[in-house]
Length: 236
Image (tube, rainbow, N blue to C red; front, side):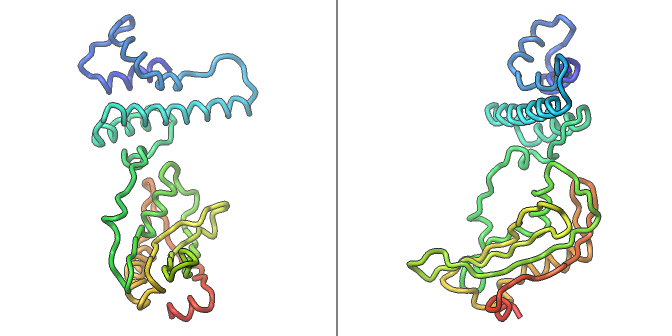
């Protein structure tokens, strides 16, 4: 709506004084065209068409806001405040954190740890779940998790292997496989203790404390560890 558009514009440019016929305000709003996707649909639409149109406008708004923030080098602190304002004054479901909203790439090199004869990138159980649910809140109170560990040759011409630790939400339909960690080395990890240390510590923690996702506390239960015979023999 026009009111919401003007409210957000006032938040972005508090130095301006706004009135119904303020030319300066109109100019600023014209420079933020993505705000107009908040306006109500005009005309009569079938319910399915209306839902599709509304979803398209929501995506256009998110893309427009993201591009505007990057183009104008908006600070993460300022964008965090704006995201909160939009969440509180509209029905848009947006992440609270600007880095999540902007999809800021992570410098993986800084997160690699030398363990068990290779390098381990550890994303984590909590971070993987929180990222998957970054824009929605879980509908269940308990996650029943399946974990999988297996070796994968990186290519046919060398010995380098990947040993990912993955998980899937058994009781959430159509949930994808989430990557908890990835080990890379010239062979399988030298020892299971080094390979699993961070995973085991966090798994014990989340089983006791649960995971906080968008303000909702969700309990964690392990349903199964899935692995082929060589992997099972290695991690025992």
